[in-house]
Image 1 (tube, one colour):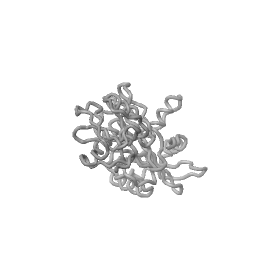
Image 2: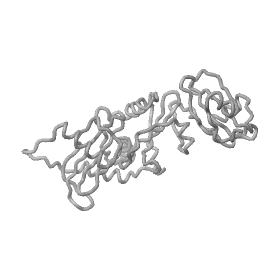
Image 3: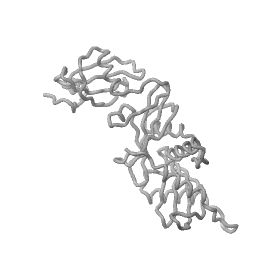
Image 4: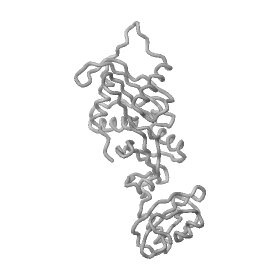
Length: 292
């Protein structure tokens, strides 16, 4: 995972802001339908996973790009998945784009450093980024009253931009939205799941620690389950009882260990069992312990 290139975003925003309008008295601005169609065309041209639900022409004019004066059109788009983007058409240079979240992070950095702030997304569904994050999560089946968020960087393996979202109650999620050139759909994982993939959440709305590997280890100790944890695997989460299902590998449990751990207000009891029992009862397949 690498950090987003703030320099490239700054350059693109500068192009968008400095473009001199090319409309004359004889040329009327394009219709809403034409703007929507043009934005959809740009989305397809960069293989971006976005079904355009709204679009606006941010700027249309002449600007200097790589030492040459070119015609630049900048669109703000909203996608049905809930995410929004700026798209910059600058022929003969390639079309480029960046999310509303990335633009907001750049704008915040400008304000903090005393520089003139860059533009932010302003379409009704894009203007409130907390609401945007909440809508994305809702659309993917996760409920979250968003308290804050921040850009984590770019995950090169999936060509996605990662955003951590903190919710009331101390829970959190990581949203992975596709970058231009990626046809992967937008996705979300809890901070617990993200931790298993090496992505560490750092925020919570209450200041309480987020759920981590140590949280699961503590649950074993608190319920008097002997296990010096060598490895763990988050197997999932129960839909009804809302317990995290975690597999552990430890020398004290030669037949493997699966624990059903209630967290985040879940009322169901803690349970633990060996891998064979977990397989027979819940069709769970252990991957850390070979079941004989």
